[in-house]
Length: 340
Image: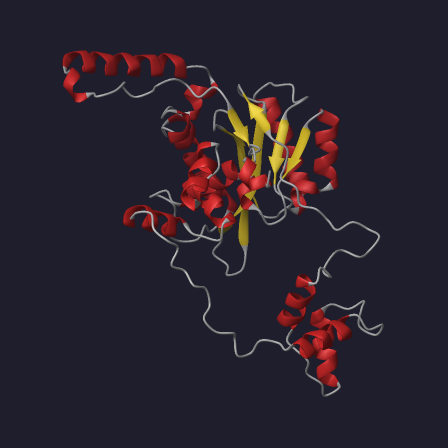
């Protein structure tokens, strides 16, 4: 019955891992059951009660203390030390939390709502200069504890670096001027352009936000401490710092750091075949040359297939251009995950 339920859930679009978790199983268990053949479930569960399990009286004492007028407005992290100061130990903080959770007493009780961290809105790019992403990374200087700051803006659709500048400080004024300069360099109207970043100070500074508002730019921000919300900038920084020619020694000055960054930007934009855009360079994609390049590759593969058809059991490699790039795509919940 369990295997039939799992199969039904997977066929309707649920992931195997999620389906097994709902039933308290693991993917490995399902794989083993299929390999061994259908038979009775031999799991017996725990054979003994934990020796340190709370007694009914101790559990009631935890609830009584947590709900006492003196402690009901405090968290267990405050309650336990206060009890210890009085020479009394009832249970650990984790035990307090577990008992309160099981009794449904960990709900938010203030009139104000707790801060929510919803996933950023989905943004879709179908051509250059619709969605940009930017971030700041540290570059080591020759002085211990002192860093230079690389401000970098990338076009999400073409992956082209549209601005990259090294500064000695983090500042929203630097960011605002760099963004305005990038718009001027590419001669674009930034009205309606989405600019995504994380929640750092330079990203949310008054000067930066005022500049975006004046230009009609749509600001977009990641959730706090969630790097996956800004994947294009993060991936670009990894490519930058894992380059074979990335200096093993610290930069001695801002001009030296800027010179290396300029060389990297030229290589990345005009020479690097980007895997996410069918291995064309960001420049070729940004300036509309990718269709011709990919069409030639497709013809090469078709010619090779005609010359030796036995080497291909299916179609040749897909060289169709990537038409849509989505920043923070919204995932559709499966019926199993929503509980319906």
